[in-house]
Length: 458
Ligand code: NOJ
Ligand code: NOJ
Picture 1 (spheres, rainbow, N blue to C red):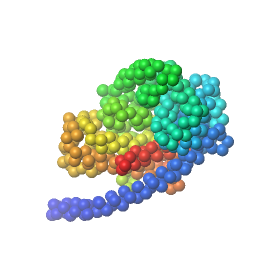
Picture 2: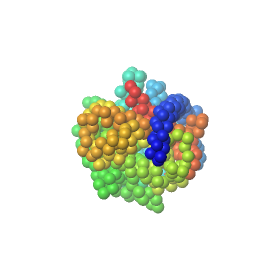
Picture 3: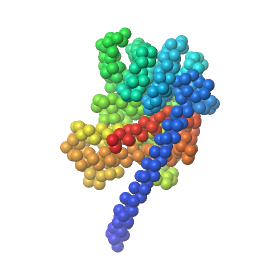
């Protein structure tokens, strides 16, 4: 009797699942499409807003609690990475050059500028040394795009771009050994995030190297190797994750006791290296991601199984579990980053290169495979297996990674109001928007995830 019931039950499940999954899938896809357009529009509204200098990217229209009506070097670079209009790029570079030339308290390590381009001199966590590196990455990568490079071909634009890049590179070379504040503007020390984007900027600059530059190639090369070695030291073999900060000097004195931080995942996405090390393929990165997910799943009320969602979702992701800023909530950018991580790994697996399952990447891969493979497929996934020898399994894994990425997108959907606006955070208790409204970077991170998803179908 029991057996028959079980059989009947699984029959109904089999009969219903494909339909339910498909309609859910198409409604998620519809939402992503609509949200993509809203994100573009709202992001654009935060670029060169009325009253600001041209080329300013405000972090958010919010002028109090928090006041984000400033141009952050970091946020602006990350936003421009997803925004391709040649005129906007030209405005951004013009304004960036201005901010490089203005005198500030910490030179190019100054994290944010007033919207007229003057230096912000109030108290702040400074310097933050990821900014110049992100700007180099954004500019050099943008120049690979035909529309941008042809629009920048003209002599004055060329001069500006070349000047920005060399000035930023010189700053990186001068300060990469010196501790600075992290991207969260909280802790002073040596950061995985800052170091990885610096390393990537040097690498990118070597690929674009121009013999007219006032910096010798060898100097860039040596600094890059040195950063690479320092980055390796962030791996904590006892905990099996990359430590966000070494040599912690000050900041967040009464909180942030954990060193497990989504900044590590953002670093990999923003550096976007093609190498095995410090890329989405790096099994240590996937181990760090698995631990982050588990930690956040157990931290936020909205991640508890008792929190009802009309459709399946992955856990909401924050910065680190004992965050206290605005109560310590999940963020849109960090949740979008988890979607992107899955999409990008899926794309890598399509390249059909050698890819070895290890103890470190196994939990991450298993979770994805379980969404598309059978129990026996999942059982086959074992440490030591080279996926190159198992094309069928790779295919299921690629699909599983896409499906798992989509669950993070579905999580964003769940906490995005119907008007499509994305703030900085959503409340850990009820998922309502918290902190700065219309955060430019939230839109950029959503668009960036969407772009890596699209790449899977090209
Ligand atoms: C503390 C927050 O955690 C940090 O991210 C923010 O930038 C600063 N306060 C300034 O608002
Ligand atoms: C606080 C975040 O921690 C920081 O990374 C960001 O640059 C600023 N807000 C502005 O969005």
